[in-house]
Every structure is written in C-alpha cells, then in structure tokens.
Image (tube, rainbow, N blue to C red; front, side):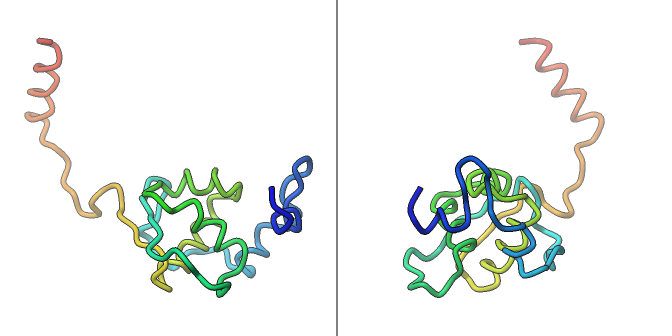
Length: 123
C-alpha cells in the first residue's frame, strides 16, 4: 500500500476514518437506479487531483465494467458509501452505469416458464 493510502488505512486496523466522513455525512443516494448488481465503468483516466482520495479509489476499481458490489469490495468500503460516492461520480460524468434489470420489465408468462422447464428436463 502506498504512503498516501497509509494516511487513511491501516493494514491491521482497517479504515482509520468513519465511513460517513467519505460521504460528508450523506447517507442516502438521490438515484433509485443504483443497486448491488448495477454495472459501472470509468470514463476518464486522468483527474488532475480534482477528486478526493475516496472518489479516486473508486475510480481505480472502475477501469473495466464492474458491479457496485465488486467496487465496494475492491475499495474496501461499505456498499452504502460506495453508492453515494458513485452517484457523485455519475453526476460529474466520471462514471457511466447500466442497471442489471429493466425497471419496467414484465415477468415471463407461466406458459413460457413451463416450456423452459420442460426443455431443461428433456436434456
């Protein structure tokens, strides 16, 4: 871990700052379309020091498409914190996202599900 990381993270103790300090006390995400399986990916490579360390850490995790749950694990931050910070990054056009499920998708009919089940049984 670099010297910059050691200022906020200790290998044995974990994060040295409370999660709400990363979000400046914010706990709710304005967006209702971000969930654990939402895929995110960073758009920009060089940020010129304009973002704080927590946002930069999340962007590092988002160089390839990745779920929000995986970002939280990779950044070693709680899921709620990551969602708030990702919401910031989306608003600032550093990150784009794609939800895993269509918001208004209709469920398959029971007849279709039965045909799928019958097809699987025939295998």
